[in-house]
Image (cartoon, rainbow, N blue to C red):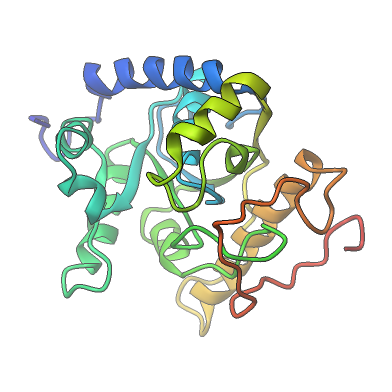
Length: 262
């Protein structure tokens, strides 16, 4: 349980630090992890917002491992269902993560809790898309405005964290098909890449101006897309590995022009 006061800086519980070590080991068993980039000097322990793309059920483990490599212990904003899971839910609560009860009257509390966490010097990891993306090319979708509103409310720096390769470890429909997928990954050990990009420039956006959250959201997703481009140079349009269980839709496609012109 978090026993610090509202004015004390947050410190990662030992359980969370231990789980980061476990995550690093798990990822190392099934894949070859490559981490590039870093966070700005002085912000490794916050206040900081990490904005990551969400492509697969395995990528929270990947991000946990990558943050371990970079000596960052973020508090993750995760859906309420994760917190209700046996054992895992208790671990999430005791590790200091932030619950998001989507499609409920209390969903707005998550932003308040996240802003308070950042104010206390935490690193908070968020998924700007608000779900696992369903873009056919697996590029970041149009984002929800929560990440931008968190940045405005806290004044914290936003760093995009792009990841690629987790979709080769688990199927979209996990836990169905997990054993077969993990067996394949243990043999193949695909490369998973994570890149911490440069901070998002939100300085030209007036937080009180009309459409500020929407414009900031677009800037964050643009930066996330730019950070993803060098991780998949040979897959500019569609991924080489296609998960047959993953649905696709174009309703929320993000129209960022990528450097390769795709």
